[in-house]
Image (cartoon, rainbow, N blue to C red):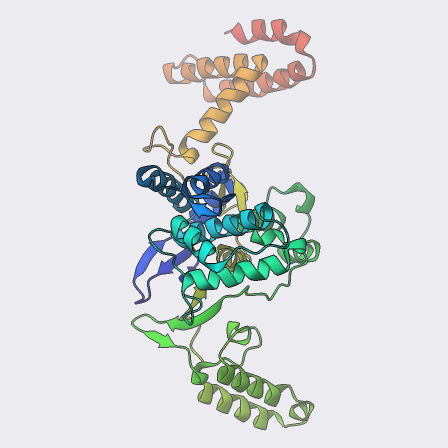
Length: 427
């Protein structure tokens, strides 16, 4: 959970005081997330669980602090490596989901784990406490026990949402699909569709609404020098405003009342001057923030919501993305003919995919085509003769044109290669 500001280069994670915790560059966190492997988490989680409790005996196991701590930290490192928003809260949610799943599948259907027994195992799983601030009226272990009871009552129709790391899985599946269906300029099935058409196709096939802002809400607007707190006076009258999706009761009622004024059928019968004065009065009283000065800061509760809004923002700014031909990761393509990203190489940070990729591609093509290799070798030889004065520029141009014509014939009929090689050797 946290506060997020979306920019044209990615998201910015903010602390409660507005200070920057993390700044994304060129949407790299988003692109990296869909290609990272979290499979080890599904191995480590049962191992950690079995280190902590004996589910059949419904009792904690003797503490093996070092082994448990090592497993817990390993999972934490994998989680934070997936995406900066994958805080320890996600790991705790996964452990809790696995705990409930094991209780439901190892205890006979009609039998319920007692509260004292549940609490003992709960504290063994979370010796350092459980971070949960959604419900301050009860302690975390009491809230989780009530959650378990609810799951037990509906044990015959348990949904996949209760499985460990389901939010990670859902977020990755959605993001991967969205990027390919809507934004990837290499996606052949959609190459003839506009961006809006691709977005509509995706929403239809995935049963998603275009104007959904998930479960996120705007806490405040961030200005150049100050935070503008969300209040009834800052409600926008724009139908597309995020304020309309989720706001406090008084704010929602005010927004709806203002919308009713301008959408009522009687409004259409008013003269243009009266309409203009009415809209001016509404805007003056609502104190609508200027789009170029203030930026909305969202309160995000899940990774899915975070990435959902980021994908929507990428669509609104009409970004084009493609996979790099060298590292095979997505990047924002400023032009359609750019095929390599600017990421530094793992084995040579001084070089990037864009500086080395085209050269390597040419070399591969030459090595895989003997005729092309012979042409490339002869081309360099003849070009060097221009500098030594043995060949003039017009002569070289004529030779190059004839060499390419003969190369095309060889590509059609490889049996002509020996004859082509002999011709290339001629001065």
